[in-house]
Structure formats: C-alpha cells, structure tokens
Image (cartoon, rainbow, N blue to C red; front, side):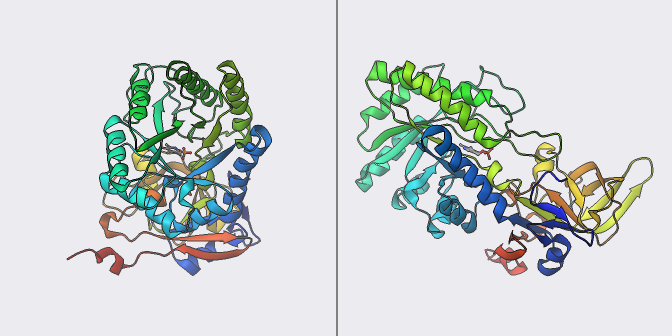
Length: 432
Ligand SMILES: *Cc1c(COP(=O)(O)O)cnc(C)c1O
C-alpha cells in the first residue's frame, strides 16, 4: 500500500511505522520529527551482506556511506551488521570513533581532505584513504612520513560512466570535481606516482558513478572498465591491485514511479562481470567493496510535521504550512526531489486534495513538495513525508535559527530517541 514496507494504517486510521502510531509519536516527541525503522535498516544491510555471500563467495564487504545519515546509532548498526563505513570528513570520522566503530573498516573519501583531517584520520587508524588528486597524494604521503606510518590508499577513478539518472552515458565524464580521469592518462600517471612514494601503499581502485540509479548496466560497465584498468596496471607496471571499490548509488522508492531492483541483483550481475574480466586479464578475482548510503537509510525513514495553517489561493493553489521545511529537508529546494506525502492523521482516507506543503522559513522556495495529493488536510493534522531517512538530517541546517529535529528509532512497536532535538541553548552555544 505504501512505498515503504514498514508503514501501515491502524484501527484509528493513523499511519504507523514499525508498529508505532505516528500521531502518537508526534505527540510524545514533538514535531518535526525524524523517525527511522530499525528492522528496515538491518534487513537492507543484511541483503547487501548476503548478496556477497551468495554471488561472490563472501569476498567483499559493503561499506555504509555514512554521509546519507551519519550518527552514532547508524555507525553501531552498520558495525553490528558486518558493514564497513565510508566517511567524507573529520566530523564523520569523529562520529565513527565515538561510536566505537572498528576504524580499519573505514574508507576516507572526499575531494579536498585537509591536512588536519588527514592527521586526524591517521591518528584514528582509518583503514583507507581514497585519494582524489595528486596534491592530496603528496600531502598524505608527507603527513604519513612525519608520523612514521604507511597509509593504505585507493584512487578515485572517473571511469567515464555517468549514471545520475535513469539512463547512462559512457563518455564525457571528465567534467567532474571528483577523482582522476582514465581517458586522459591522468589515472595511470597517478598510479605510477604512488609507486614512487614510501609512505603510501596502493591497495585499491575506486569509482562511484552517481546516485539514485535504477539500472544495473552502468555498474557492470564501470566494473569492466575498472578491471581493464587493473589489467593495464598489471601488464605495464607489473603491479597487481587486489581490491576494487565500486561505490554506491543504488536507487530507492520515493514515489510509486520509482522502481528499484532488488539490491542483490546488482551483486549477481557485477560479480559475473568482474570474474569474467579478471580471468580475461589473468588477474586474481579482486576483493570488492560497494558503498550503499541512500538505500540503507532512505526508505527506513519518514519525517512527521504538524500542520499549522492552510492557505487556499483560488485558481492558484492551496498551501499547507508545516513546522519544519528546508531546514530538515532541503532536497526539494535543492533539486525538486519528488516525495510521497501522507496525511498521517487520516491515512485510511483517500487522497483527494492537492496541496503544496510549505516550510516555515523566510524563503518562497522553502517547499517540501508541490501539488501533491493527500487526504483532506486540517490544521493540527500530522503529515508524514516518506523516504526521508537519507540526505535529510545529514543536510539539515539551523537557518532562521530553527533547532534541528529529534530522531527516533522504532522497532516492533517500541520507540527510542537516537538524536536529541536541539534546544535554543544549542542554537547559541557557540555565540560569543
Ligand atoms: C555519495 C556516495 C556514496 C553513496 O551514494 P548513495 O547514492 O547514497 O548510495 C558512496 N560512495 C561515494 C564515494 C559517494 O560520494
């Protein structure tokens, strides 16, 4: 009935998530409120882990791309489910450390790691640096030398596959701020350079071709291109790279128009391609990483709001104002992202009213969704926006000095706070 399996409707006609009544959650914890279903998160983690076992002899590991939703509880769950972690900043490293995450299973990404972040990552014993450019390579080597250690590195490669949307293009992806281009020879030169440094050890190659991807073909193509490159490195430099990181980007359902394939299908097709290519190039079958972010947290999460006002502009539209908006979910303002909105107070009623859900910030563009169909809205209703587990809290801001909402984890009818609501005191904490 809903795009997310953890949702249902109870006898009161209220939307439920993980067996909890959302109207009760809104009352108990206040709104806006992020709610995450633990079962959904863990099941998704397991489906990735199991796909490695089923199709690749367990010779790999999913890394949770924590930028989708970084907090201590997500780190703990990822660890318990046997995933590693992908981080992109000192703050995400710190979060992992604080959660007691095994840091050797952490990959450090980003196109501009600062010297401080590199030092912090080395001190924290981060497992691998995914190097973005030559300046960074040199900087990591230099800082590792100062510390008397060898940093394990990977290279972020632009494989020339662009798959940000429903289809993909094979060429012309040189224009990306991330990584080394293959077709210009830049990536090959970087590999040669790394081999001349004493304090970095090249272990892996990495690519990430986009996000919210529904096709399997671009992943397969990217994997093949990467294996070809590993073959070239072996043939011309006599160096065998034994690990391959294929990034994330697996699509989720925001609305009924989205049709994700089961996640294990990716591994099925990608492992076939990788094994075949390894054979062709006489390479050992590489250890594989993938980096799902959105698909682990996204569908598990919803956001609850309380409707504070309704404005019907005849022949134009009806605005429904909620107590959050771009501060807790900037994705519509940023990229007109589609979301499903449900009147959680009347989830048993047919969606008959077309409304624009507006946030409370001083920006006309502060909209959560435009022209969306919901059951007739009254002031005081609880509205739920679905599939907000990823890239919502992690992109939240304090614009207009609005405190960030709390996040609650639900599990089989039980609920607990995993991120506290910010207070006004928090808002001025760093003001002098
Ligand atoms: C963003 C990102 C991911 C996660 O992408 P999703 O679409 O959330 O799965 C993985 N790896 C890298 C390098 C990324 O930048």
